[in-house]
Image (cartoon, rainbow over all chains, first blue to last red; front, side):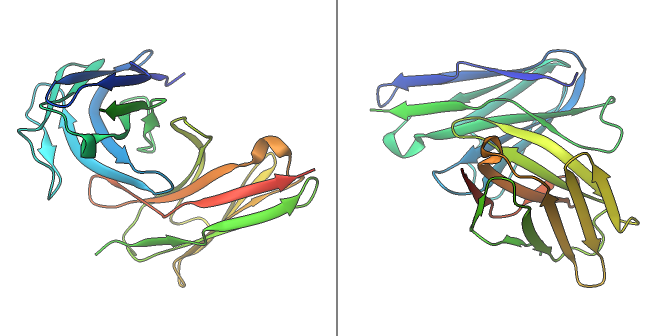
Length: 117
Length: 109
């Protein structure tokens, strides 16, 4: 149980275009979803936290107009990278936490590798 | 602020035990976690420990918590080549997880 999927697993886009990444909790309701960014050989950096039906809370230094997060249902959150640039190339990982996670643990998706050319 | 540190690299031989260490700063953490990340993949929750526990064992995994020293360790018994990965400890800070820097475990045959 507690499976989180992400789509796509990798994407290549041209500079200036927008890219949407989907995160789904497959077998539980995710009241809270998190979006992380990971650079090569580094730890995860939390970008934002979203609760279903509410606006996302962004971490300091993360541009909310550039990284649009929508958490419209208890099983789906999306991250849209708007007007992507090469420096946005990274590994993006979502995570979900819900009522089944009684000890507060988060379950992670497999990640999406974004390359902006 | 919250800060979680780990040694960067550990190399062991197959069949040996591995011990990955972690230090944290937030004494109010209620849960501490260990995650495993294989190349190009997301994080897999391995185990967790509640802050009022000293030790937790789960098959080949043993977690030790020294709350006084804010030190957490993960011992993997009979380490296998499939255990090669990056291991992250994490503490639950205020409403969010704070991850360590990650320890890359290399298991050689």
